[in-house]
Length: 320
Image 1 (cartoon, one colour):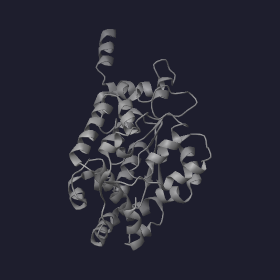
Image 2 (cartoon, rainbow, N blue to C red):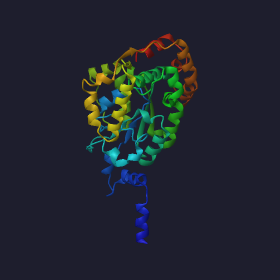
Image 3 (cartoon, helix red, strand yellow):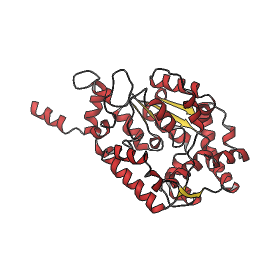
Image 4 (cartoon, rainbow, N blue to C red):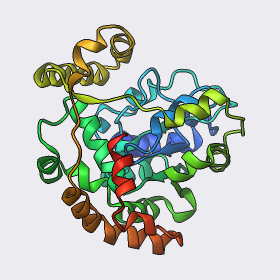
C-alpha cells in the first residue's frame, strides 16, 4: 500500500508538485513560496510596463537583469526551477513579482498562473488602443521582430489584435483567478497622476507605498526615438540570439550588450517612421470599438475618447 502511494506521488506532474509547494512549502511553511511571484503586471505591451519595472525593482523582487522571463507563455516547458532562478534571493520582507506584458493576451499564461500560483494578484493597464497598437508596431519593427508594413502586420501578427482585445482578455483573467485578484488600471491615469496611480497599484499588490522622485515622474513621458532598423536581417539575428541567451538564463550577456555601444550596431539608424494615414486610424477605431464598449460596461468608466477619431490622437500616436 505504501509503495503504491509513493509511486502515485512520483507520477504527479511537476506542475502539481510545485503548486502544493508554492502554497504551503515542504515543511508546512511558506519559505519556498517566497521565491515565486505573488503578483503580475501583465500589460498589455506599451502601457508603461518598463517604467513600472524600473521604479518597482528596488521595492520588490523582480526578475533581473532581464525584465521579462516569458515563462508562463513561452518557456513553461523549462520547468519551475528555471523560472525560480530569475529571482535570486527573495528577502522575506519583499513581495516577489513579474512585469510581464506578453502574458495579457495568452490564455495559456492565465491558466498556468491560476494552477501554479492561485493566490496571485494581477494588474492590467489599458491604453488608448489606437495609440498603443501603433506604438507596438514601431517597437516590433525597431527590434526586427516583424518585416512587414503596418497593414501587413495587422493581418499577419496575431499579437497586434489579440493584445488589443481588452475586455475579452480581462474577462479571461477574471475567470481564471477571480475578479478580486485582477485589477484594471489606465495609462492615462499613470501619465496624469503618477503618484496616485502608483499608490493604488502598490496597495493592491501589498508593496509599501513610496514617493516618486522628480526624475521618476519625468521619465514617464520620455520615449526612445525608434526608427526602422538600419539592417533588418542583422537586427533580427541579434534579437534571435538574445532570445537564445535568455532561454539559457544568460541574461547578463544580453544586458551587457544592451548597455554597451554595441547596441547601436543592431538598433536604430534606419529611416524614421512615416505618418500613419487617416484611413488607417479610422479603420483601427472601427476594429477596436466593440472591445472598448465592452470594457466600458465591465468597469463602469467612460472611454468615449477611445471610440471616436480625433486628429490630436493621431498626432500623439505618431510620437510614441
